[in-house]
Image 1 (cartoon, rainbow, N blue to C red):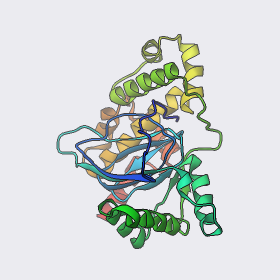
Image 2 (image 1 turned 90 degrees about the horizontal axis):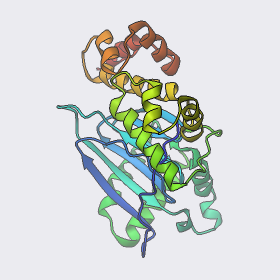
Image 3 (image 1 turned 60 degrees about the vertical axis):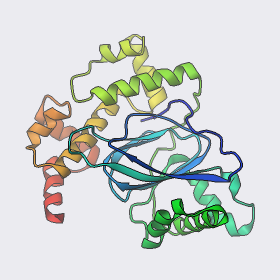
Image 4 (image 1 turned 135 degrees about the vertical axis):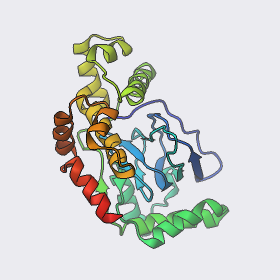
Length: 282
């Protein structure tokens, strides 16, 4: 999928980077991109992560490095009793790295982040440094960031978005359309959404909409919708005891057989297996 909205970052002036903490009842749909590279560390909560044309679940401990101008956002379910969403966000321009041999490996890592990098098992040193970073000031904060980036060059990572995905359309009118359509889907995926209905939101005919959606969001409308529903189902499977057939209906599938088939094709595992794994890990 291709998350793309307006540029939301303000230019970083008189400082080499910005680091801040986020704490909200939920992360709302907001596709965006910016010229800064971003390192996002989730310290509490869970939901669905969208990076480039990649859709997957996030949870506490999630660490992702996002390249410049790569569309992304994190979305959580707005339900009573859902956990608070908290994280640490670092945004910086690649120019903060001095072009010396000591930074070669870090530069390579940042170049690879153009497709988004997920670090599945960051070391305790990385996690501790990330927790300390927001409370440091001046040169100490910059040195800590450089230390974190250096540590990440030694960590295992998973590339998120595919090479085929290229975000080049920065026309404001098109960005607003992507924003409008993606928000509509993410706020209404729990119910039936017809192709005709979502095409109307984009003010396009269904055939034109399908071509436009694939070009601008990196997946077909059906794939995007199903992936969003499946990731939401994962959250219910892990965090609740709701029956699987009830979860299928809750996230927008009106056919449990189709839900199970779609779930396995996207996750490589059945909903029942996810739940059994969760019970074993409890």
